[in-house]
Image 1 (cartoon, rainbow over the protein chains, first blue to last red):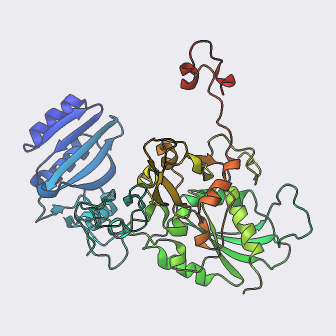
Image 2 (cartoon, rainbow over the protein chains, first blue to last red):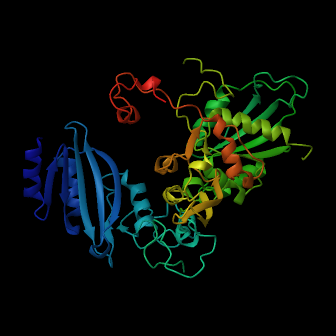
Length: 182
Length: 143
Length: 152
């Protein structure tokens, strides 16, 4: 189907969706309640038979945006389906009944962002070692090593190893202002 | 992991006065991109051991993640004597570009004793040969 | 499958701008700290102090930075080249030498003497591509300056 037809069908079947199309990629933003309906629409109506990836974006106060990239091999069209889950209730139904390939992607998104996928056959950590605490890809998880390690660039030109008087030190790149390791 | 028997090529002009013991058996723990460079070196050098004595070298090539660290440790302990460890590339030397990561072991020497460090990101295949030559010249009579 | 080329342990066959090791020309360094700040691995260690240089005649005395320590930790270095690109004074150079393994990891931190020792291995810059505009140095010299190959 053409891009225009796709947008029309999406508007008809997914009342809560906002669609945008640019250069061979269609992005469909849906509310959480229409998540599975949107994925089923993409697979069955829009012909997106190739599941590429599923991941999340930490939008901080707004919540966590979960994004899926699907591809239609016959129409050669990319489809991004996106939803937003609130930060205090990051729960979403699993996409595995529709796309088996989503299983590992959801495991990774769960351990990295803390999104819980209801109905997932086994939501165990995939890449992180046993006993790892926290969700590393959230924005409030800084890299502790960068704050703990002495930054060689913190010295000013001509300054000896220890500053003569305490002054506001340059913050190394990658460390949030005022953050110190626990 | 594959065991490759390696005769080490000589440098231009090197005499036979003090030849190195020329055979190593390389066990390549190819964890990431450095594995490609090690493979490129090994495929050009592989040969047939003339006897049955060779130094067993575990080449740790690539990023040692926290999840994979126990397996690297197990690979070292499974290696028969005489055994050496060669750390290939920045990630396995010290964590390299992932020194600040939440899930990377900052160097293979956090887990196992390393005999030779080969710097690079990734090092050239020829740098592996330099590293193996240093390893053999420094090997001594350690078991 | 084609036969792979034989391994060559020397550096003569390497293409220009090959990234083997970083050399330091200390005379050009003004201790601006840009390389240490831009390095993504934080592997450049610089220490310095300020020195007042009295001016001849009745000029104002100048203050300049004197380099105490310049070290690159090649166990961390990922050979990205950001330090060489960031240096405004052309004090850092690429050299194609790659054969410097060590038995101890501390040996992979090259202090400034060793970084200077790499300087003779730095190849001359490659010639400009044919058809390229003339280098800015030749343009600044005014009309009648020779082509790129003859400049300098």
